[in-house]
Length: 554
Image: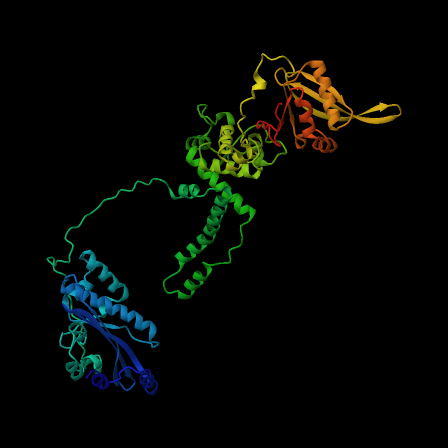
C-alpha cells in the first residue's frame, strides 16, 4: 500500500523540470511564499516558489516542507504558532541562499492573529520566551511581509495536524498550494491592520522596572586622550595626526557651509576632498603636537600663574616665582639671564611642567629609556634641555625605582648562606699549629751554582690562630711533601689534623703546580703520616664548606 501511494505522488520539484521552466519562459517575477501553522500535535511550514513570465502566466512549485512534533512539556498554542513562524523565517533564509534567482521580497502567511500582533507590536514588553523569538523573526524579516490567511487555505495545516495517506493523496493543497497563488497578486488576501496586543495577554510582561543611573564624569575628552597612552612618542604622534586632520577638515567645513542644496556636483567634489593623500608626519608636526600638549597641561595646572603673567607680573606667593616665568607664544617658560647665550632657545628657556602631571611621568620615562637607563643626573641634564619640572629630582628617582629593567640590572645576585665553622676552627684551648691547613705556591727560580732550579713554597696555616709557617719543597713529588711536613712538625710540634684542597682546587697556582699536585701519591702520604698520628682531610673540589674525609688516623 505504501509503495502504491508513493508511486501516485507527483514529482513536483525535479531539477530538470525546474530548469526547463526557467529556460523556456522569460521569468518576469519570482517570489517565495512561506506558510506556517501549529497545533497541539506539532508545528510546520510549507514553502512555494511563485513564478510569473512576461505573459503574466503564473507557475507554482512546491520547494520545501518541514514539520516538528510539539514538545513533551505542555505549551500554549500561541507559543507553538510563534515557533512555526521562526521555522518559516529560517527556511526562507536558507532558500534565499541556495536558489540562484533574483526574487522579490518573500511573503509569510499565518492563520494566527496573536502571532501577527506579536510581530507588529513595537510598544509591549514580552516575556523572555516570546521576546527572543519575536526578535529572531524581526531580524530575518520585516513586519510588512507577514499576512493573514484562513486555516482552510493554509497548506501548513497538514504539517501541523497530520493527514492519512488516502486523504493526503486526494488533497492538492499541500502540493499545489492555495488556489489564489495561481493568479496575479491583485486577488490575494491583503494585509490586515493589526490592533495592539491586549494588556491582559499572558505573554505581556507587566512588571516593568526603571533604573536611574547618574554618570558623574567631569573629565574632559582631551584629558582622557592624554591619560590613554603610556608612551610619550605614541602620544605625540596621535596628537600630531589629530592636528593634521583638523587642518584638512576646517577648510572643507567652510566650503560645505557655503554650498547650497542644489549644487550636487560641488557636494561630490567636497566628498572626494575629504579623503586626500595625507603625507607622513614631519618633525614640525611632532613639535606642534608637543607644544599643544604642554599648553593644555599648563592651563590645567597653572591657570592663576598664566592669568597673572598675561595681565602683569607674578605674585611672590606663587611657587614658580623663583623661576622668573614668562609667556612665550602661549607657552609658560623659565626666564633667567641666559637670553644672550648661544644655547638653543629651548635650552635657555625650557617649558615648565608640573611634577604631578601624567605628561611629566611620560617624558621622564621616555628620557630614561633614551639615555639607556642611566642615572638620575644624566636624566635631569637631558630633561632640562627642553623641559623644567619642579622637584624633578624626586620624580626621576620614582621613575628609576619603577623601571623593571633597572631593577633586573641592579639587583644583587643571590648568595648561599655559609655553613657553621668546623670545630678545629673555633676551639681556642689548643696549642698553635695543632690543626693546620697546607697549600703550595710557586714555583720560584733560585741559583744552584750556575744553574737555575725551581723551588716551591709550602705554607702551613694554623686553623685557630691563623699563624703562618713556610717551608721549602725541592720538587712536587710525594717525598718532598712528606719531608716538608716532617720539618714543620720538628719545628712547631706534633700536628693532629691537616686540611688541604685537592689538585683541582689550586686556583692561584699555575698549570704545572696543579698537574703535579694531582699526581701526588695520596696513599703514600696517608700511610706515612698515619704512623705519626696525623689525620689528613681533603676538601671536595669546587667547595669550601663541605668536607669529606678521604683518609683517617691509624
